[in-house]
Amino acid sequence: MTKYSPVQLCYAKRGDPIVLTAAILVMIQAPGRLCSAVRHLAAGGASSLLSSVKRTEVLQKRSELPAPLWCHTVCADCVSMKPARGTPATVSAGSPGTRTVCSSMASSTSRLYSSLPHTLSRTPLSEPEELGDRDALLRDCEEALQRRPARLHRSFVFPKGHAPSKYQQPIRVMQWNILAQALGEGQDNFIHCSADALNWAERKYLILEEILTYEPDILCLQEVDHYYDTFSPVLASLGYYCTFQPKPCSPCLEVDGNNGPDGCALFVRHSRFLLEESMSLQLAPATLFSNQVAIVQKLRCRDTDQQLCVAVTHLKARSGWEQLRCAQGSDLLRILEQATEGTHIPLLVCGDFNAEPSEDVYRQFATSGLGLDSACKLLSADSQSEPPYTTWKIRPSGESCHTLDYIWYSRGTLRVDAVLDFPTEEQIGPNRLPSYNYPSDHLSLVCDISFHEEPDRLQ
Image 1 (cartoon, helix red, strand yellow):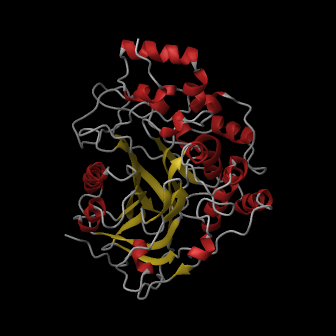
Image 2 (cartoon, rainbow, N blue to C red; image 1 turned 90 degrees about the vertical axis):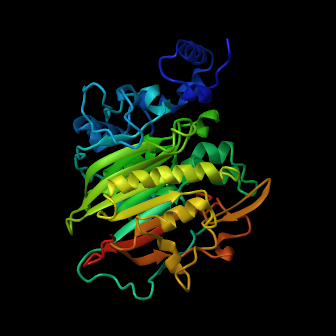
Image 3 (cartoon, rainbow, N blue to C red; image 1 turned 90 degrees about the horizontal axis):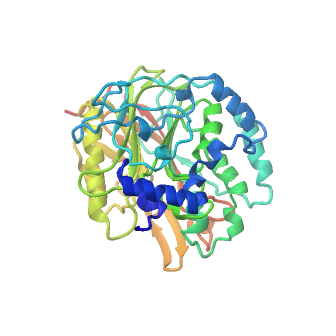
C-alpha cells in the first residue's frame, strides 16, 4: 500500500477507503505527527498562558457560554454539499443540499485537516464578556520579557489633509503575519536569529505585547498556529469576537511537535461592532489545489450604525507562483464584490499577499471596481508609494527585504486618519527579523480609519 504522509492525507477526499485505511495506519504508527494538532484540545490540564487569565477559568467560562462566543470555526463534519462556484451557502442546519457551520470545540481531526469550502453564517455570534484586564496582561508581558532588549520604537504619522473626525471615534486596524511557531522553529531557517529568541514561552508575550500596545478594534493575523491555547482565550477575554480558518494542508503539520495547522484569524472588538455575517473560504479551489484561505465578515458599527465588510487572507508564497496568487486574488475579489454589493458597503482587506507592488495581484486590487487603495501609501511623500519593506529576514539563500503586506480600504467611503510608521534599518538591526526584540519576520501594519461623514459612494 502507498505510504501517505499526514499532509498528503489532507488532499484526499473524505470517505476514500484507501485513504481511510492509510489514515488508520498513520494513527497507529505515528500518532504524534497526525494528532499533535488536537493534543491541546484533548488535554484539560494545559498550563495557563498569563497569570490573570488562567486556562482553568477560561475553560469554565467556555462551558457556561454558547460555543460561538469563543470561536467560529468551520467543522468539516458539518459540511454536506458544495454549491455552485462563487455562491455562498446560507446556513441551514440539517437541510439537504446546504452546508452548515459547527461552532463547537469538539476535538475532531477533520476540522483541522479537511479542505474548507465557502461557508456563510447569517447568525450573529453572541457577545463576549470582558473578563481580562489589558493593563494587567501588559504587565505580565513586561515581566516575562525583562531579559529582552527594548522593543522597536514606532510612531503614528498623520497624513496631510486627513485630520481625525470630530464626530466619530477612529477604528484602529492591525494587520500582521505573526510567524507560525512551528515554521519559525522548524522550517524557516533564520540563520542570524538565535533559537532562544524563538522560544514560544517568551515569544508569545512579544506578540501579545504588540497587540495589546496598539489595542486594535479589528485585528487580522496570518500564520496563527496557537489559536486555541493562546490567541482565542486571551483575546476573547478582552472582548473580541474570535474567528479562525486553518489552512487545509498547513506546512506546520510536517514539523515534529507542532501545535496544529496555521491559518488566518480575525478578531473584532464587540464593543465597537456587531458581527452580522461570517464567511470562510478556500481560495481558487476550482482551478488548482489551493492551500490558502480567507475570512470575510460583515460588521455593523455601533457608533454610526454603518456596515463594514472586513477580509483577511494570506496568499501563496515564493517566486514562481505569481499566476496562482493572481487566481487567488481574483477569487477573493469576486467574493468581496458580492459581499459588498458592488461598492455599497465599505471594505477593508488585510493580508500577507506575498506579492510586491509590481505583481499582477497587487494591480488587481489597486484597479478593481471596488475602489480600493492601500493605507500605507500615505506614509510616502506623494502618497503613491508603498513602504520599502514590510518583511526583512536573512536565510541561507541570502537577505530578503520585501513589501508583501497590505491594508486595503474603500477610498470612497473610508478615510485613513493615521498610519503607524515603519522602523528604520538601524532600529531593526544587522541580524534583521525575527529577533530578541521583535517576534516575527513581518512587521505589523496599523492604521486608524473612519467613515466619511458624507460617503462618496462609487457607482
